[in-house]
View (cartoon, helix red, strand yellow):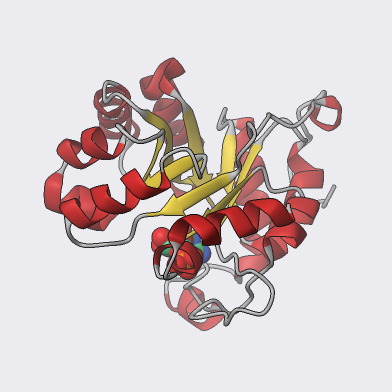
Length: 244
Ligand code: C5P
């Protein structure tokens, strides 16, 4: 364990990984229109493990977006909450009442009290996932906001979040191995930036293949365009699953 981190939870290394169920694919429904989103979800029902609803759909349609998509499978609600602990606890409590939300994201940089408040508020509705450092932030940009380089922060934030009670983390593929060995194996590891071999990386600086990410310890894979922009999204999802 790196010196700059606090002592680990004593049983961290012994715990086993949560089951990702039979299907670790979370398909990112990144479309602006709810009917389009529902159409995608209905085609992919039973073919993927979960549907990711993000700020665009939630911003446009609110809880109705979750309710409609949840008719076709569990929802990963990616709102990346970051506020004072009381506000986050009250927000997660309200969101826990939405049927079908199984995972909800928060920012680890809100600190341990905020992480604990989110977990408390969400209760047993599902899994709170802490995001460490946005991969869109370069080290230069982090310096502009007086923060250390991403590599320095990721481990400390991941450790802090799990220590504060977060049962899961959102993790870039390149960070999976070292973060996983640090926080133990019963933590859910949700990884975006996934590209099947032979496909372009789009805007991902460091994409990983589905197999590589699972081998490195991911429990769930967030996959958007390789499935949603395919001529046949069902075939694309099946091909990825068959490779795992
Ligand atoms: O289409 P694509 O597979 O690239 O979609 C990835 C999804 O994962 C998008 O919804 C994007 O917002 C999300 N993402 C993320 N964190 C990153 C990169 C992508 O949550 N570092």
